[in-house]
Length: 87
Image (cartoon, rainbow, N blue to C red; front, side, top):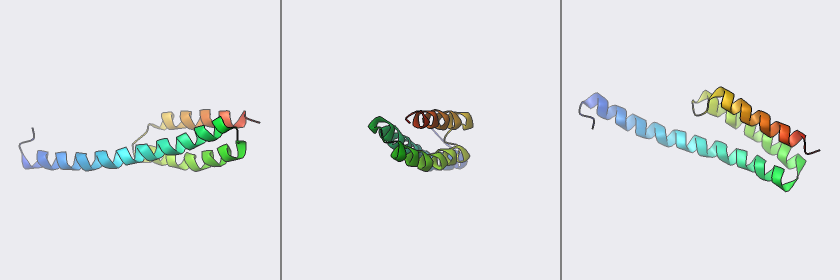
């Protein structure tokens, strides 16, 4: 357990940060799920629009440190390939 005042402050900061990161991660997953559902539904235009909405959200996760850059790129690339192959 934290004893010094600075360590106690760090614990409080980490708790706040964890909540923010959890919310961001959840938001990203929601956007990705919408793309997956559009692909499963077979609607290419809806899937394309969902992908365009998800892309900046995923990359924002990279800049905020929630996702690794390569992970985000891989997810976007694979989804884009699946959307493109629906035609």
